[in-house]
Length: 266
Length: 176
Image (tube, rainbow over all chains, first blue to last red; front, side):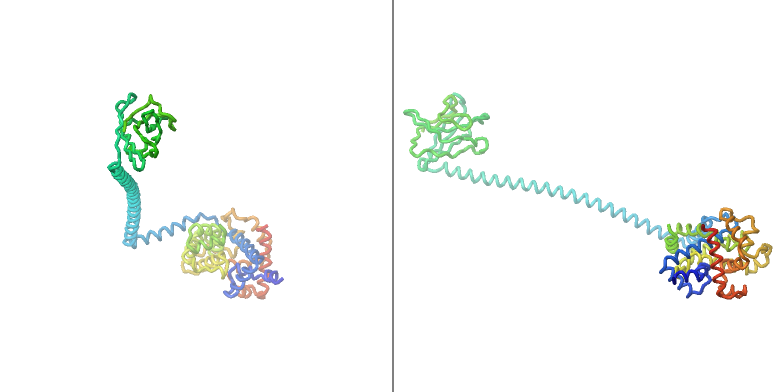
């Protein structure tokens, strides 16, 4: 009700006309903020006044560009008055851009350098790892060699050379037999690499009558670098000769004498 | 862009917003100025000055003290009144053969035909003499309620209600 009375009083029409005191203007502005109906009313009054006043306008060629030209003149006068500042601004701008470009270039260069160094570092690490492995392997094989040497030089060791037979006349091997602990070392460096699906088998032989006893299969022939294998000889086994035959994978119960590679008597 | 948005942008010196406001109010303000100075070349010059002044003093507009249109209306009326009071202008009175906006609408044949001039003409034809005078003094000359009351020898409260009735009639014709 209060709002309707306020609208009907005619104060809004005077507000749009701009003929109220500052205090009255503030009051109306507050009412407009509070009541949307009052805001709508003011908009409609203004729209009506806009149409009425526009109806009294003569035909005009004025466009906004006329005013923009005026601003253009103002700004160009300014530029003429302070050319030094304008120049220094440009200089600063160019320097700024140049610095930005240099910085970007520098950053990219640094990134590339960093990448290269990282790659180099990786390959160096890899090399180092490989060297370490080699050293480790060398150490291991040195230790093994020393151990082997020591074993073979033992005073109780009996060395039996095995000569090549019909199948492979140039083959040779050696058996080192420690009678005390019944251990046998076979050095088979002089044997050819066995064909796929075949293994060397070592036999201990009694001659009268001829009785072969298997003391081991050299299934690690290809993997072992020293080509020296430790085998156990039977305790009661009074070996009189040692022989090496080529057998199918897994070994055989009795030696295939056609494939006797080396043989040697004690 | 709404009116409120463009006014805020205009105060931040946004040229696009200023152009929008210029196109919205150009004709109305030119009409008010022309009704006062009664010379279309001079009216256009004043209109241009008014918009440049508005741009340069955009900061001084405060929406809590009135409508943006009202602010522009005041600047325009003041600029036009300053002009007719200047010596230059007083020596050149040959254009001053019209008295108020009704005369402008009825007697000028170079008015902008794109506005709803037919509807407005119907309105002013029917308008009571007292209504014409009140509207002219309040909107085109910026007289206060008290000044109108004194000029028209009318009780001060009557100015307000009569004006309200006149504007209601105007709204019925031009907005519906």
